[in-house]
Amino acid sequence: MLKRISALVLAGATALTLTACGGGDGSAAKGGDGALVMGFAQVGAESGWRTANTKSVQESAKSAGVELKFSDAQQKQENQIKAIRSYIQQKVDVIAFSPVVESGWDTVLKEAKDANIPVILTDRAVDSKDTSLYKTFLGSDFIEEGRKAGKWLVEEYKDSKDPVNIVELQGTTGSAPANDRKAGFAEVVSADSKFNVIASQSGDFTRAKGKEVMEAFLKANPKIDVLYAHNDDMGLGAIEAIEGAGKVPGKDIKIITVDAVHDGMQALADGKINYIVECSPLLGPQLMDLAKKVVKGEQVPARVVTEETTFTQEQAKQALPTRQY
Ligand code: GYE
Image 1: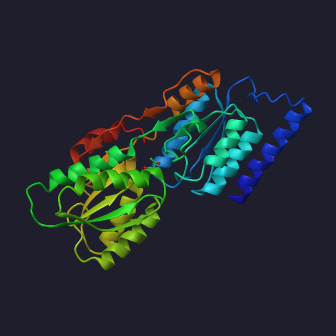
Image 2: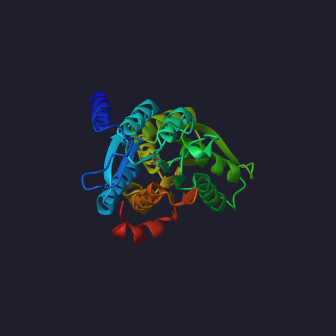
Image 3: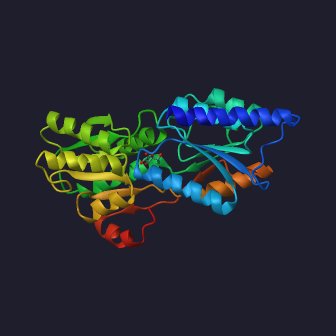
């Protein structure tokens, strides 16, 4: 990781030197054949969703003729900030990034603004009060995703009066999807007092952490009826923990997840997950479109919301053969 970052910073320094030698006119770095240059600061490679998102961004940059500078921050905000600073030094035409957490971006975004480099938020939001620090935000409505998960649960237990004990595996602490998926779900299930969220902890959006935290949940709580995991990967890790404890996922413990990546959909088709709320990672083509417009100085909507659906077991079986991710 350190190597990757220092290479990135070095590349930034080199570009800076070259620009200075060339007269330092402040003009943007142009790609080989005058192509638009995008610096993309990715969160990491924590989940199947992220892998599909990275592929979408890389492939659509290629087909849109955009020269992509890509960095992987390994889920660390400081790495993303370094990458963004390096893109500023390199005078890229546009910076796109998926902020690992919501807070703490104002300083670096101000630096980009002062350098006249437009910024596009993709996938995750920031909580900056100053919305002039970025041009647009392309991604899902995570609160709505949480609500969809809650609504399924309410429907599933509509004929029962017994208490329903829920455990929640949250995404990365402080990230927009973790904050919002938690809030949207709570908004819906708190309307009926039979639903109790008895434990809620971060599994950092990874399988390994999902498994570890679920093992602890199982040890501490003899009666768990439902698991709500903020992504498929944590749900898949939790399934291993549930099976390890001699219980049947999807039956003894009902499972709801978010994303609908291939492995999650397979588990849903197999009956180990009961319901998945889709979150599309295929943001690349829209991102490239927005980038071209923003660089030309054209107006773009302040918010572009991804369209998505939900899947039951039957729907997963139907969708799986043609699923792109
Ligand atoms: O749900 C999760 C990933 O920000 C929407 O990040 C994304 C989330 C996605 O790690 O799997």
